[in-house]
Image (cartoon, rainbow, N blue to C red; front, side, top):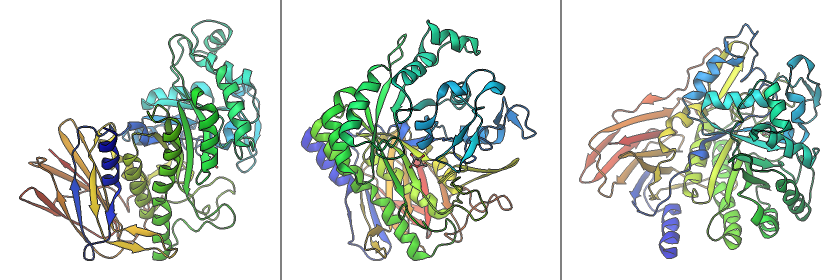
Amino acid sequence: MKLKLSSFALAALASFPVLGANEATVTLLPSEESPIIAKEIYGQFAEHLGTCIYGGLWVGENSPIPNTNGYRTDVLNALKELKIPVLRWPGGCFADEYHWMDGIGPKENRPRMVNTNWGGTVEDNSFGTHDFFNLCEMLGCEPYLSGNVGSGTVEELAKWVEYITAEEGPMANLRRQNGREKPWKLKYLGVGNESWGCGGNFRPEYYADVYRRYQTYCRNFNGNRLYKIASGASDYDYNWTEVLMKNARNHMDGISLHYYTVTGWSGRKGSAIDFDSEDYYWTLGKCLEVKDVVKRHCDIMNKYDPKKRIGLLVDEWGTWWDEEPGTKSGHLYQQNTMRDAMVAALSLNTFHRFTDRVRMTNIAQIANVLQSMVLTKDDKMVLTPTYYLFKMYVPHQDAKLLPLNVATPMIRARDGRMVPVVDATASVKDGKTTISLVNTDLNETAEITIDLAGISAKNINGEILTSAGINDYNDFGHPETITLKPFTKGWKQSRGKLTVTLPAKSIVTLTLG
Ligand code: AHR
């Protein structure tokens, strides 16, 4: 069993620079033992940062912007299409300065605070716990709370859990007074965020003990079962995972990891829209490095938790570019091009491969911040290429991973990282096979031969995401420069093989029934 699993993993990850330019083969390797792709890999993240919450998701009942009980109707409807499984809130760095009691009760009485992490904006706490849980109910997703460890007390966090989930007692009564009779269900609870940095600048040994202490008092009320998540490493900080797994593994259900596609934390990160082909391939190489990073964190976890009880949750990922000129500093508003959609596809393909350990990921962030699904300006909304990519990948949620092998030419990025021309992922659900294919090459089509391994392909439906230029994006004056389109022609089938011609810089999903 062990041997089979590891050879499956190797096969799934291999790619060989063996074929002629832009000819690639994908071999499907159906396996009874392959895991289900956790739908939570398609999780989202909403922080009190810039206009993510205020303006992006929430405008209040009295706004002239069309809303449903204060939530933007256009954004709600768009997000419903993504079948979001889980939403993380209220941060991010904001979480470790957030005091939840400031966000309950009559809105006019709520104290204000300065959002010191994000531009010094004054936060009026008008969007609080009830508003978040109501939003999750409207979207049909699980809430994921990030608890305040950096500047909050054990008691404060314990009472938050009680307020949300208890049937009886003082916190339940307070919740009732504020208009919510029944407790909510709360599964995912993060105990701090980036505790090595904005969440308290802890050393891992110390945080491991603090984590053990805080989580002790987060109780399971009335049959609610918390899934407790330790604040995990940034990128290449393997020591953090090592120390946490060594010292706190018996007290956690999951540990997080943050990995951004970003040049560095100081200075310019580069424009979201104004980049050249070298920048583009660099971006894809950096994005794909997540494979090695996740693998190394998984290797450490395997040592301490060989049965894979504990999940690795990449609860922040995505591109991080310079803020758009003219926007407020500290609000992390960036545009989103076809390059960002490529990063989303390659990242999700990678997370699928590790789904036996990677149980959740949360792209940063859902609206108006970093690699967003939607951008809003007053009463207008645009859907980003990343939104369309998430929409295209919905069939992979909770589907059985179909392992595959890709043989593809590679492109060398300026820093020496190798970028595959073709990448792929596949899954099976309800008798349908979904294959997603990526051609990263900016100029050439890719001719991909798929060995279907006996899988029936009587009916094939396809969708394509591509654009004339890799720098193309949707904006308020041109909201539909990039959209999902039907892909009806580019394939032929013969003797158990499917040959697909993918245009340059395109992503295609085929559904075989
Ligand atoms: O997503 C923006 C910020 O990035 C988050 O607040 C923080 O956790 C990370 O550094």
